[in-house]
Length: 69
Image 1 (tube, rainbow, N blue to C red):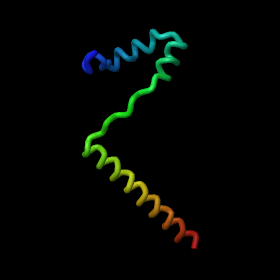
Image 2: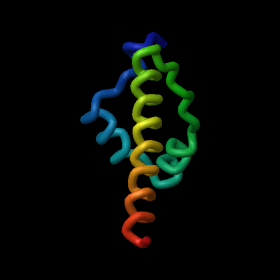
Image 3: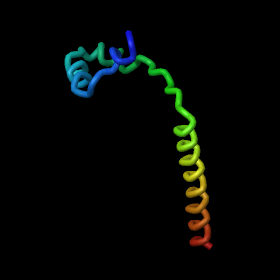
Image 4: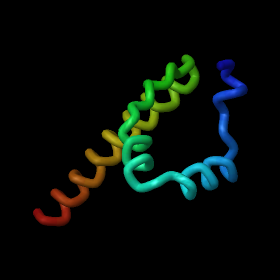
């Protein structure tokens, strides 16, 4: 199957999930999804967000430390 044939629209996915029996739905949810290969810009954005998160955690803990002192 080509990539276009594997793509399912939102309405089609809702219909598929509504017609599955509970055990079929559980089996479909257990099927592993492969990791997505990210491009350079996407990786840079995610690493920037991670660094920002660490920086903001340091700022919050620093402010909490100063407030307690």
